[in-house]
Image (cartoon, rainbow, N blue to C red; front, top):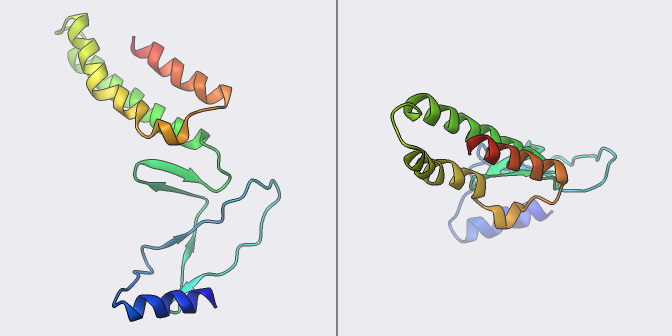
Length: 134
């Protein structure tokens, strides 16, 4: 019923939804598995996902930020490896620090206001990545 109302409101305003780009994620902190309802837009079933990357932040259905922290630390370590392989022998430590501040820290800090890590394991993972760089 809600889907029909949504489709009607979109039609009245000359808007459309691309059902192939739409995702459905049920957000809950419950430990037991939940029954996912079938969601359809214009007769096409919408894909159900458990996590989704939105504006560079990985949102998960259990409201945990661990997957996001792991994703950004992996990306930061990849960039660090590139910096050290390419520039370690040729630049001073001051220049390497400038590269770290310009290229790696933004990866680690992007959206931190939203996902601020409150689990100890997430904080340790971030701190280990920063210590590895310095």
